[in-house]
Image 1 (cartoon, rainbow, N blue to C red):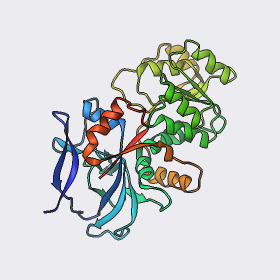
Image 2 (cartoon, rainbow, N blue to C red):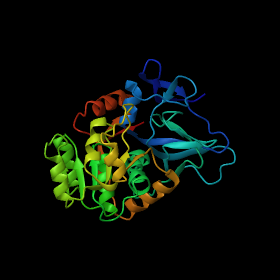
Image 3 (cartoon, rainbow, N blue to C red):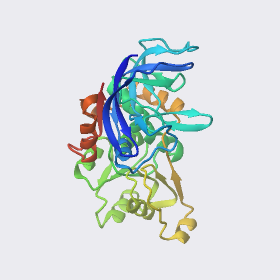
Image 4 (cartoon, rainbow, N blue to C red):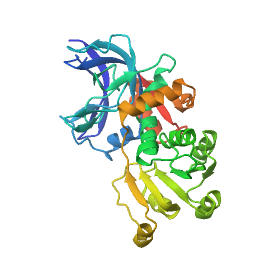
Length: 337
């Protein structure tokens, strides 16, 4: 039986190891993909540190990696739409019996030499888009895209705030500018992140610790407040801060994950202003991925600046450590099998 390398997380002990495992064989309706690039995400860090736990995983060990691009290596019985050699991006999850399973969380992901996918859970990657950029789209780009265009339903000329300008938030800034939000205000305690937000199209970048934050947002929005606020940090204090600067009928969209409670300090004001709090997770892959690939191919979006470094698969633990410690303030690190 052919073997391959994979970065496997033992859930009970939260131990990440590079192991030799059996190379998967595609079954009916499945495609085997030779992995070319796999993104390292903060949710991978949270799986390793125990903040996140798989809900649907069979067994106690999983190959991490939900941002994956590569080439079709083989197809299982009955698969006619894919042929070996095609460049592809894998969805960050699959729907099985009406339930969404997340790749690299609930089943084996792409921190490996090869990855399996259902035949309807991947899309073609145009030749003009490199594998590293293609890999990050299924989460780092499509999650904020879904939050902005579907959950938050941002319209042109609406004032919008983005809290947390890291791996997802920095793309939210780019995407908000692309859909015509104005002004786009980035809020982050890290000066490097604020500079990056301005370079990516934010109209204003503010420090969340600024005592005059509320006044500055008021001035930037003509006193109206934000039509939509996005929390990419997953921090309770951020959510309370965002609620204070929301416009009447404003939406607070929760993208960053946290197990901490959410507090609405003034429930009467919240109801009187008819504000909303909306939870967001992932994106509608069959819709979001082709949209984003088309926008990249058409020159409307460019994520080449989002690749902060590449490491071989064998150094996956180092990549995780660099992301966790914000070494060099990376947006996305890529593993190359």
